[in-house]
Amino acid sequence: MQSIKVIQPDDRKHFSAEIDKLSARLDRISQLNSGIYIDLLKEKSQRYSDQRSVSAAYGQVYSQNNEDGIIAEIFRRIGIDSKTFIEIAAGDGIENTTRLLLETGWRGLWVEAGDAEADCIRNLMRTPIADGRLAFVNDKVTLDNVEAMVEQSGFVTPDYISVDIDYNTSHVWRKLMRFRPRLFCIEYNGHYPPSMDYEVPYREDKFWAGTTRFGASLKAMERIGAEHGYRLVGCDIFGVNAFFVREDLCNEELFIGPFTAEQHYEPPRFSAVAMRGHARHLPFAEE
Image 1 (tube, rainbow, N blue to C red):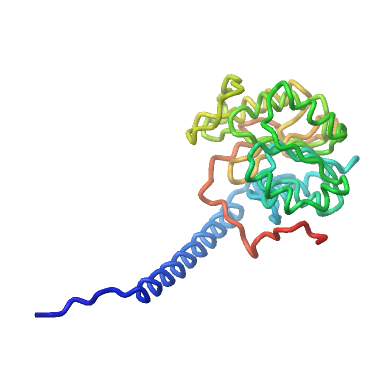
Image 2: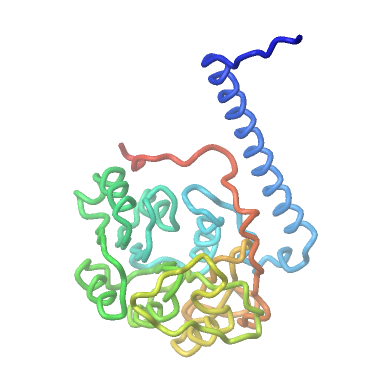
């Protein structure tokens, strides 16, 4: 009779370590495939070869969807005034659209509702918080409090505002129009066709449930922007965020027209999102 080998504790440790190594390799392959996919997409599609396109701009230091590169490219074209920002839903401070701005001489406001994320921000960003370069509010944004948050921070003439709160994004965006930044970065719902004007009703107690029902379609965002003097100039290539430039700074010499959802729509490519190169730096860069 053939003996049965009993797995010993040391064997389990070995198997666990090997599985971890394999998982890390698979993650790396996934990242490489995502990067190759995006590079091929940029190379093969004529829409990204136009020098006025912003969707294919390279640059990813602390952003998730190459927003770092898009933001830098747009400001290269339209210029900078106050060098201040507002980010509604700043995450944990490791990954967002304004940390690179903060580390390159900008000042601004971060708002984040999550307690764990807030603890991370207070720890990693203690230097800029202490010296006043970064104002931080740990609270949920609503239509009733968002304007007061900005006013109390003192950053009332921002060059840049980002809003990414999943469910009520479009409604909060309207409240922030009065601050007239040069550039908005706004999350849109790319599941809806580019010609469909759809927006969820505002509900203060509502959260994203992980489904396709959240926020507003790109067409709705185009309409809201136009109503307040902003033009849609592009979306990130992953189909997450739309970029709106104040109309006095926008023309077809700088950006691709027409400034419509049909022109600038990018479908959801969430599975292609990957951090290329080295990992993000955790503490604030001056430390």
